[in-house]
Image 1 (cartoon, one colour):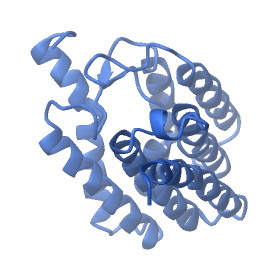
Image 2 (cartoon, rainbow, N blue to C red):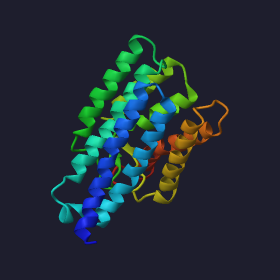
Image 3 (cartoon, helix red, strand yellow):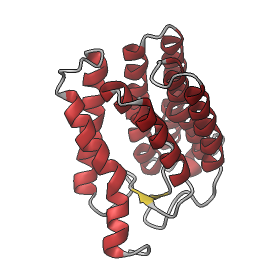
Image 4 (spheres, rainbow, N blue to C red):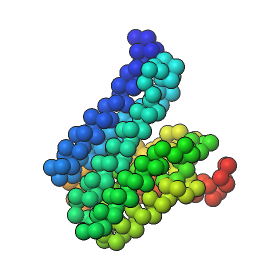
Length: 231
């Protein structure tokens, strides 16, 4: 197999995320939340490995007919934003007008963020919250806080998309990658576990989700404080 064929296969792997997004959406329409999140976890896993593969096989040079960055953004919007926002709206966690506010804020702010040319920093971290609503919504399903807490988190993170605050990329941000990458892998494991047991309140997966989520959410900001914005 030539390197051109391998590069093309990477694009095809990325494109499977659209299929997983559709499967997740079909499960969401049936309000089968566990199955929906399991499909989103699969999509999250694919999103985690296709980038390193694309760089390894130089898809921009060896398979330039497809724009891998654009393809990735389209699928990320579906799996990170669109499906989770729908799930949050239909779940009953946000009653009445609060659900409408959340779904409008999430989809509108995320569309702008995904088109923002400043979203990546020099160290390949994200500038602003990177629209990982799939991660937030899964944790919300697991711990089911008061709807005012949910609404406050949605508002804060939507605003944080446009704040000059860093959020680490688990694979590409070199600083602390030895901790960050295992944390991201652990989050994926705990997410799949929580969904598999239908978010049972006694599951230890919930504690793992909270610990790993707090790290992934705050590590970039801590680095920014310790090393400065150019560090």
